[in-house]
Image (cartoon, rainbow, N blue to C red; front, side):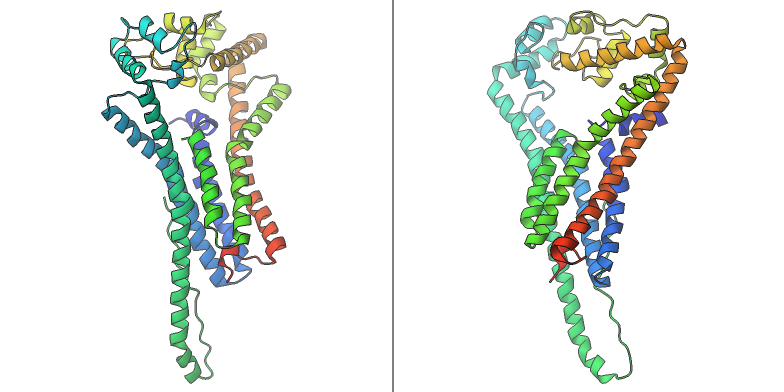
Length: 404
């Protein structure tokens, strides 16, 4: 994967890649280190217990959060296919309009995509069943991760801490006679710490995070841990799913004002030589009125290819647009406006290639800055604020759930 593709991936806030970088690569290690350091102010044993719990909590949840949702989604998809339905058929097509819909597409594509049309006919004849299957798929792919992360994992984590503490107490009791019989010797006991090794898509993840918050708060061991968990999880949801969009929009708007350069397009588009040459040579063909008609009649045009890559448009192997997919005309119109704006600025610059390279550098810088800033807010600022509130409310530096 090229550097531009990597930057594009981590700059796409609709995908899991920015979450993967922030969560596993930056946020988790930083929070684990801060947790150990904060609890060390109380005692070494408290720090070790907090460290073990945080490693299990952070990486265990990450595995389920980042991997469990797509895995369950995949299994549900296979199950629906076994029942004879194709889950690729977008339920938005049930809403018929003047240029698309299930009935409309069946009639329009009956000779162009007969196999796909037959699949659509079955869904149309069994609308309620199909909608229930899709609802079940959504429920399972969110409910199971919520159950695992929000309820099962915390309870097992807390049970492990209680077990290790009890074992430590028993060791201390057994050692008491030896301490009494050996005067003049200082016998030291290490905390019962057993540090676990690192355990190692986006709307569903946000919903799952909400369920995770409920689970974490309800399974917390005391009222102070419930309060802290609610604050921390709410902060994490905001910084993961809302703040990155605000930061990206802010950086792009600032870049447009400072450099007179539209950087609202994906880095892969800004690095596309065919796209840049089409602008330079005035050969870039864009929709004038009916977007869907343009996509159907011009599948090989550059705009259609870009819409396929960035706007959810799908084409079959024979070049026919997939009639099972719903076309978000509003999204594509906004995409076209950004392309037109970029093309206009590029032409006015006098050197299209140079302008595109400048835009690519600025956009890449914005993405990296977004990742860095959002990661700092998640991995450092939020934990620090949480520790300050903990000290103010409980009077202690230790994890509230570990205080006996």
